[in-house]
Image (cartoon, rainbow, N blue to C red; front, side, top):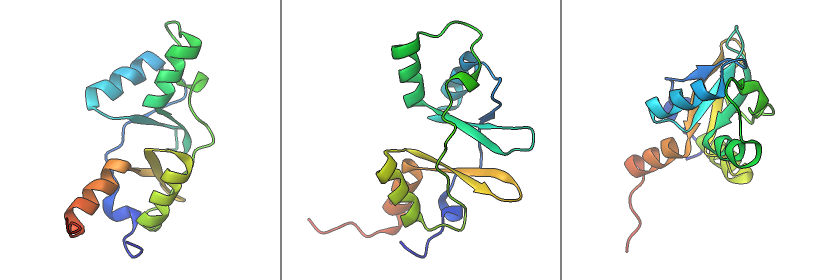
Length: 134
């Protein structure tokens, strides 16, 4: 697994929002697209934060949001990221260490370029690895 890079398995079709996008709109975007997170970017596609399913559970449980609440109120700003050149082992280690299911993939020039998820890692392993004997 060490020689396989994040860029090979990441999802490049991202659903992004800006920090002033309403939480309600972001929730609908996630539901409509069957995704577990939305990446928050600025006008130059630079990562500002991430809003995940876990954040929505916290929002409802703790804050009981009102209508017209911007994403900036709830997004995680100190986001752990990987690059397309990082190994998938490093990405998996970061996910396990932090308890994450999503890692944005960033590029110094282009900003956010993709997302690698636990589903991406599992799909890669199910296609590439020989099942262990029973």
